[in-house]
Amino acid sequence: MKLPKLYAITDARLSGLSHAEQVARLCEGGASLIQLREKHLSPREFYREAVEALRVAREWGARL
Image 1 (tube, helix red, strand yellow):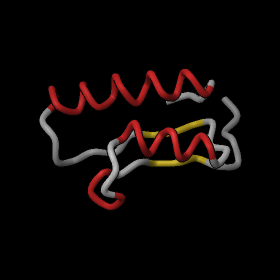
Image 2: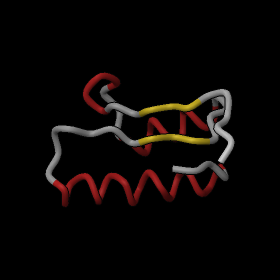
Image 3: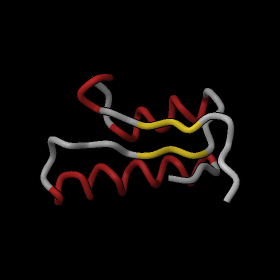
């Protein structure tokens, strides 16, 4: 797999935004491959965040 020039990693604590909001902004800025980073949520909470972030990424054609 060839990596794109921009490989973005989200962090809700640093940004103050949900992962879905971060994914939308990153996609608007041209990111096509995004990694969710979250060390402070339970697995269940992270899953909920990831599902929403994936929905946004798919709308933009980005990989998550």
